[in-house]
Length: 531
Image 1 (tube, rainbow, N blue to C red):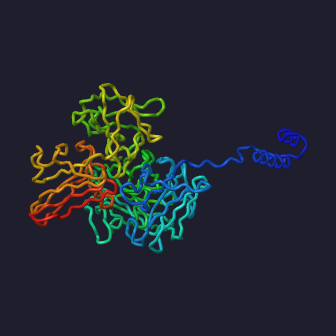
Image 2: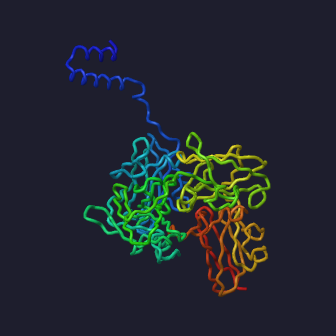
Image 3: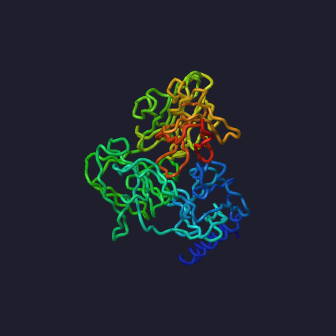
């Protein structure tokens, strides 16, 4: 008799409860007997660990091959790191990390309810980064088993799970500074985004929630229009952070610090608009990933997308009608662009673009993080899309917000790597470029490199003068600029947005070498010799 017949016989001849129990046993035996029961769990082709354990410009970027882990036996991946009691974001030996598979943003694994466990899939939005302190300097092995949803760190470390303090950081602090600074141990972000600033502290309430009251204005915020952006942090560590989920007011995404944002299109800062001046109370339940703001404020719906850049008229105004995309039956957003081999802002067929949400920069731009065809949202290491066309025609650009992908039909030639670096600024030697030293496409701005990673240029400077400068890449003008971003709390070059120029106060007249490392983001100015 086969198992299916035995099941039917039991239901006819036995009492109901006995039949159900026996049927359950027989069904289990059937599953065990099937070939699928003994199939090996799927092991992804690659796995990545990202975070402050890696460091550098690409530390949180799963697309970067430098974050790959080594595949071991039984589907476990591992990676060794030298970690220090003076390392980590706050130079206190506390590190943050999470895992990915397949170099894919959507395949993310974050901290579970207890040490050693991970959360993936839809529930990962409410899970945070793995946070731990190392007891001593040395080599540590990080292991990751995607099939089991587990991780380990050896030798043993002190994992951090309890929230002891809570902060709000961002443009909700209208009166605070916007300049990055160094405190003797670490680079600190601009005061508005500094998780250690005293005015950022929440008060813990008896019910376990946290609250803070702030003066907000209809003429306040980053662009003085009443639109505010902020992120929350726990224990003065922005990598133990919380951001917003677009279109879902009151819900938080965990693991979202300024530098450690996950990069999904649907996750951004907490963004809202104030229409009446007054005192506003923000209350957060971090373990539930929920927040409220009273009195009520306005939120963006996150329901429309735009294309920006020199592919459209009025290039960098996302509210312009010429930027609007249309939604198709599959939920994707499309726009037809007419492009030519002599078009673009440089007139050579090289174009620059990105995407925006709801016709406003408040929800930040959408570009790519180093992998063409896949998007990256709201991170200092997010690039604009840079590409070249070789024939005139109509090109259909498609954005899939759900999958985090974009495409062109017909295809274009992507420009995804730094192939050259230029320096621009108020330098006397560059003043003949037609823009007083600020024309990055002039050949005189090119820097020298032996390895395609580290670039240098020597310039004669005058003592007592304050010089301002920026780096740009690929002779593409301001399409790809590299400047030290003031809000992320790291002294390194980043490509996102258009932050203020770098400054160098020259002590003595002479020859100076400007250096920039496009991989690590390190930069410096060194004295060579007196005139």
